[in-house]
Length: 219
Image 1 (cartoon, rainbow, N blue to C red):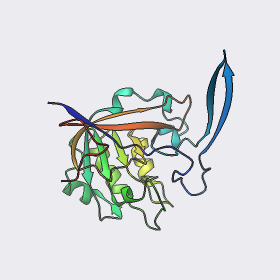
Image 2: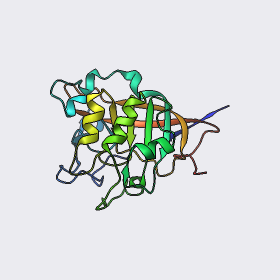
Image 3: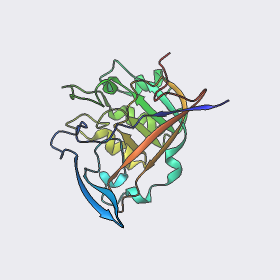
Image 4: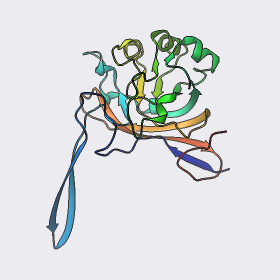
């Protein structure tokens, strides 16, 4: 049986949706010649929490693990996409009902996936409640994936604090809009940014079945 690979990363470019107040992405190009052949070099200006990215514990704790020290095995292995659409506040009850926490990597599909690639950011984006974060910690989850710019409410950081304090890594700004809930294998490698509080990442889900498509079709 073959596999299909589902890219859940948000393309990184100048039009990408960024957190309010954060610097927009900027690209500039240098063109030159080397040994008679033309070449192009691109200068990229991005924040550490722009686009699909990983939050390291150092993001909220001065003594926490930095992006370059995160164990690679956290980002590769069984993952569960949980459907929490329709809920603005995702608490422990929502997660319990959808069976979250069966495997070490839990990816939450919310209504945020409808705007994460193109914007605009709604006034009330979905977010993970503190008790929801605590539930995932108690279930032994090592990585929480989220399809919004932040796993938290725009004016709070409770979920971040619960997860990162427990050593749970957060993968934010993934696009699950066309990905069906279910079991997958996550393949995600953040850049090893030395001393980084966060790092850009490419996130892919592998599912059994014929090769093809960017996303799995909704059932």
